[in-house]
Amino acid sequence: MPDRAPINFTRGVPADESYPLGELTEAAAAALREQGAAALRYGPATGFAPLRAWLAEWQGVAPEQVLIANGSLQLIEFACLAWLSPGDVVLTERPTYDRTLTILRRHGIRPVGVDVGPDGPDVDALEDVLRRERPKMFYVIPDFQNPSGATCSRGKRERLVELAEAYDVLLLEDAPYRLLRYRGNDEPTLASLAPQRTLHMTSFTKLLAPGVRMGFVVAPADRIATLARVAEDTYISPAYLAHAIVHEWCRRGLLSPQIERLKALYAPRLEACLGALDRHMPHAQATRPEGGFFLSLTLPEGVSTATVRARAAERDLNLADGQAFFPDGGGERFLRLPFCALTPAEIDDGVARLAATVEAVRGV
Ligand SMILES: Cc1ncc(COP(=O)(O)O)c(C=O)c1O
Image (cartoon, rainbow, N blue to C red; front, side):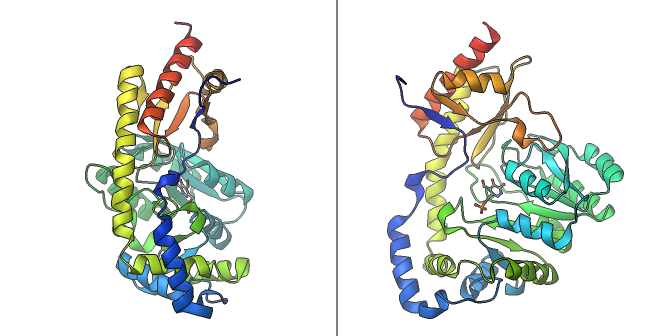
């Protein structure tokens, strides 16, 4: 019998208390009342037109440059179907988001990794890999990366874009955490540096709720038209009712205050995680992000994540597998800590349990 509550440093999910239930209840009633059948019938695969127009204005682009899907992960699937074939190579950061790797492999695509440091991908290694592997696409999470917590510096973004131009590579910029910056200053998006060769994805999963299943991509209009054909062949049209509710909620000016509330909720959780590491694991090799959902650790030499994970379970501490984030091997000592869905007290307790586990595994 567990003698204390389990702590889950496993999945990168929003905090339940972040969901604006009252606002969504009212937005849902108003959307149905005001949009009527338009929110319930089939329509263009690019998404519910009023939401598409709202997002385009928010992003400063034409509506023809926006496609809304049922979550942003599905957009990666669509990109595979639209532009890639079995046997193709796609570059990713190493580590990267594990579900993207699953999708790429399911399409027979070979993911090849480029090491990512706290300030983004190793751009010298990137050039070597581009020369050697001739990839068609580079999947990048430049802001508060899942799983490492890294943010790509401006200099690296500029170099990355230069290399993408030189080797004619399409950039798939996945930016679900970009707006959740708790301190410091924004770096330019890859899309702003190379609009013609970048598909920039945003998700409402982390800004509103995963349950709305809403993500969108901004790209050149011809790319959007291609994605729209794939989307139509997949589901005719996406979840219009969710789009209509989200549109009503956005139209009421509720997105910006929600983002401010999320920052106020999550910033102390990041601080709690950093503070707990300083206190309980002062020698830990950890990233120190300024936003997002994750930080990551490299465990000490000789200490594997698999062993720590098994032993942590005995202390009711649940950890995720580190190796799943690595496209082509490695990650034996990698550990991701998602901190947003835990209270500061749980985070401190969890890091203390982790520190005790690591010490027990090292035999000190
Ligand atoms: C980098 C990244 N991309 C995509 C997703 C999935 O987002 P969605 O819920 O919009 O499909 C996540 C969710 O954790 C993520 O971390």
